Image (cartoon, rainbow, N blue to C red; front, side):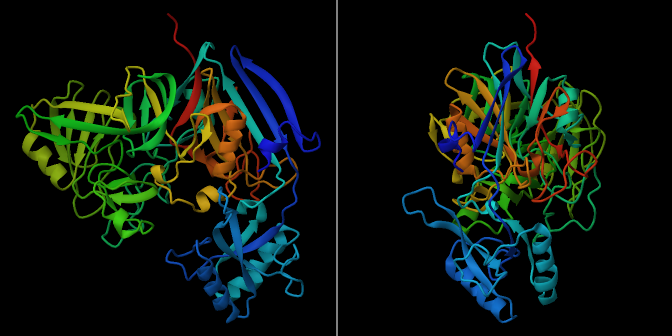
Length: 554
């Protein structure tokens, strides 16, 4: 996007609204820029790629093969380059296949593959693609990541380090049940908040049991956790770990060992020892035993086809953004914050649990799936994880849990009042320079995730210690709307705003900002979606959030 060039710039292309004071040391600023000049088109899902339903591929020959297949069905389409790489070559990151709308025009004509209105593109999908059993969808061309005029809406909350307010991580009433941002802000008594990290997707919403028709991998492991909205990756609240890290991913640390705010890559380790001197590894916290969403935890085995054989053979498996891993020998800790009951384990192994009191003394055992009383903790195991519990955690045994939270240099970043949250996306800025750490955070080097324009939420830290909460709306090309940004564009925005370090939080339809119980931005679940209160999932339920609360008194 041309934000870095336009701001400040042509007054016809940019409107800068002066900062508003929300509270002492807290300001809110909006930036609007650009105008709509893109058009609707029809994206044809590529069937010759390895991944079913793909919309982007990285080599031109695959896109050309798809075009040739469509020609056999009398469908005229062309390959389209997507998102030039941010390097001197300027080569496309990927290619898409687009339906030709006006074959009589030259391919260089802007109307060759574009419709004037969304309804026209929808009719083309219905009348041209569907009768030929071809999948596709309307797409607004600004999404492609190619040069665009916008428009863009950028909202920025700046928190001065001297403010009596401080940023914290929170969740809803419990971790197992996601809550809209508005409710999380209210429950925490906060002044404002933005969406937090990414979360588990899926068809199964809320508490167990998991529906029997849940999709499974070839080895019978459920593809989804059965809990939509459980945070993906690190979540620490007031020094208490609610969710273990997907190791080596970028996270925001608040009140850690290195000061009030830090953005760095982190990993977690947890060890459990019994009265009989035996010890073992706790692989995860507050997640269903066996399913490791996002990978990057001890014992995780990849179920995801996106990795090449070398990556898939790594032990332990690296973090994979939205990757589905499993662990047949898992051991997981559930805290009271999880909810009223542990989940049932899906599969042939019913799992085994031991119940602990507040002093970590074993008070009972059972098949997985049972109540969590106030003050209790529950260890849930399958495979050798369950075997260890049976052998070394009998009723009356005292267990000792130890853990660590370290950066990639092995240095501890933990602190008694630490709050920490994993980025839903990669790091964007480091040391004042744009550094989009895709591979380190489990993304392909380039994919539609980074090259397409989407709504995004970003957190930045400035040189003076100020924290910036930034939402950039997207998927809305209509008057007053915003088309969103690529990850590279988001990084450029943060650098322009003065961030020395920045990380992306959740993105897409998750992007939201609540101030004083009012929704300040316009969430969009998909391009061209209806907006406003009363629309289902307009304010999505989220796994966690970043909220601004009053600092405790002396």
